[in-house]
Length: 177
Image (cartoon, rainbow, N blue to C red; front, side, top):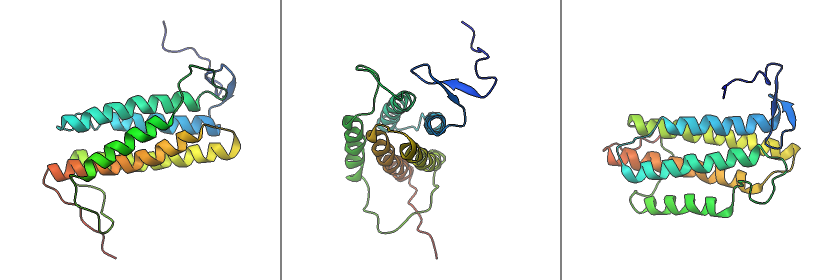
């Protein structure tokens, strides 16, 4: 099987239902940004912390579901879709790590260790993906759990960054105003 088809040479691409859309459509922007996020999460592992790596692998699999959901304007039964259980899983990961972290009393600057900084970067791309999905929802009907998942995941990536930095002995610095 060849990796290239030439079908996209004129700026169009196929959705999961085989309908053709412009590569600049809001739907392509949305799931393309989720794809970017997924690739960025892949640059973080291994973090040196098996429990965090396990969760990040889960995140990458969830993000494939988000992409498939967004690439399918009319899902059939059995097609991959984001569900409440995906959101619940991220919430449980956040709650589990909250016990390990000191409560936040102010904003913190993104950064820290190399892996912590990459997780903060992933958080910002996740927020952009969320904005793209919200924009798509303003134009077309989508699964609301996709937005909810990305919103929660950005909180999760922030928490993972804090945990990794804490374990590396790096505490978050508050911004000065």
